[in-house]
Image (cartoon, rainbow, N blue to C red; front, side, top):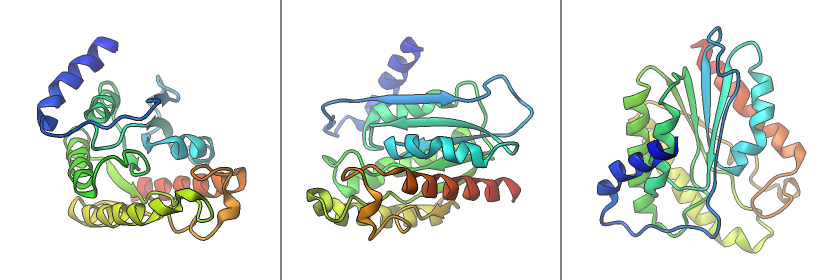
Amino acid sequence: MIKTLILLVVMVLPIWAETTIHREGTEWCDIWIAKATDKKLPRVMLVGDSITKGYFKVAEKQLQGKASAARFATSACVSDPAFFAQLDAMFSHYQYAVIHFNNGLHGMGYSEEEYREGYEKALQLIRKKAPKAKLILALSTPLQSTSNQNKLNPRIDERNRIVRELAQKYRATINDLHGISKGRPDYYKDPYHYKPVAIDLQGKRVGETVKKALEQ
């Protein structure tokens, strides 16, 4: 697997040759494939960050008996070539009926134009690797309005606007996770992350949205 990821990074680097790569103090990637050998149910993939990792179990429970859930959560922004190495690996051995995609809170070192370019490349990769999958784009959650990180919310709003535009272009459904958390500073345990009550709300929303896509 390590050799595969290194090869994939080398393959995607030419695309980003003129882009300065911005990294965080700690970079991480979390992949979870539930019921990996079970082919009886359709498989869905939830792509995101620590927010996705937080609500995954709730969403998975919502999908019980309907689909097997896979999780790909990462600190890499769509503007980072490492993201593409990680995402491409998710398609190596599995097919997905629905892909729920979120990326927007990390990579603030990149401009919104760079974000748009990277996000569109990610959608193109998904459409290439999973042309039959239903695609859901989740709007990024806001940062706690009473925290110092509130200053970044206008940038998150702009990134969400970009996501809405690309959803139309790539025939994707929008899941507004931003709206259900906005204006609720009591939902947060820190400027980015949520208390159980909000995690439960997000997970149920994701699970129901994915179920609707499966039924279409």
